[in-house]
Length: 466
Ligand code: ARG
Image 1 (cartoon, rainbow, N blue to C red):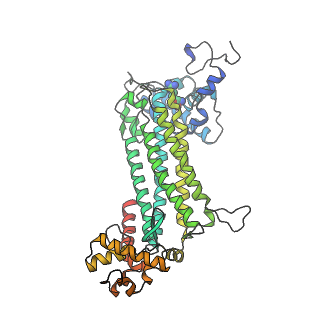
Image 2: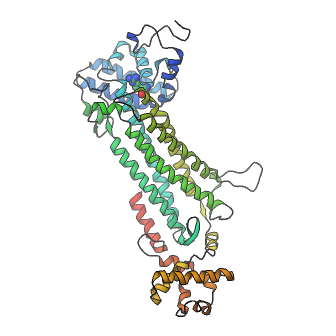
Image 3: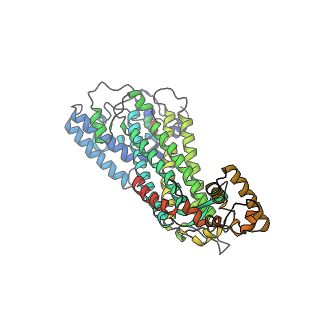
């Protein structure tokens, strides 16, 4: 026997083993350091299973009662921080069961009737991801509310709208913010789809084939708040789609959050100053006293990389696994825990940042004076009033933009005569469409940026998304 080999075999499954695992085996095998986070779910699953076993006459009411009491004690011990976790007992399931035996004796051994750790971990993990999904949904709701409130307040704050990060056409800040509300609204809808699909209970699939005991899977499913039991016992213990879906939608959400964070960084920079973030969501520099850095935004932008990495990790863990459960799947938890923590933190921070921010209407308006933002309005006037084909109007407008640029003027500052030198039929009326206010106000098409439309869109978003 080598030094690395322990003498005693595992108390929970050691029956056929002469010696215990080597130290390195214990190290690679144990998941308790991270899966202790599942203790609430594990105990809830065991309590539901135990109640069902009693109801079905599979274990006695007396044993059932002492198991329930023991599990309540363990829940308290862990919550209060005086439970001693043991790596030798591998995971949360066996830590709890072993403690149960200490507390109530032999009756503890009956809890695992008609169950395996395979369906146990599947139900624990689903319950955990479902809880995380619900918390994320709540925080997303708060972020959406903050965005819609700000959109309403800024429904008529005019700023340059960008394509290619080049000033394109006037839009309102409210309109810009509502674009993010749409993205996050879709994220929330994906989250709810994922939750609905995940809400099936794998408990009772046992190791992989089901069980010969007369269990009632519908009862345990209902007791744990699931819509129904899963349909196939083999799929039940091998499926981690619910976690992958959570990470997928989380990655898309993370992508949205990072785009939004990047815009905050841009808006706070000296060239823009469209927005001021509150002291609560910025930090100072230890050397440059004038600085107010948008660290929360930068961290959100950076942290979502973890979520995308987690999705990749779990996809790679699962790919190529044969049916049904494989120990590889123990690697499912850390990426999901980290991604859920990260998403909830980032959404919460973003909600606070959005709620606290102040828009700077003067700076936004000043920025609209560069970039010939009303060029499209000029072209549209040529089409509408003079009946030019849009392509010809585009060409005339381009010539006028070039003329203004050469003279260092905005197009609205060209004289009527200068304009007529390019297109003789232009009249004074053209100047009515060349202000950024008129431009924004004219965009009344459904989903457009006209302040009246944005105000109505904010109201509609409130009803649809909150
Ligand atoms: N700790 C394990 C996991 O997280 C529990 C399931 C173990 N099942 C087994 N047959 N060894 O996946």
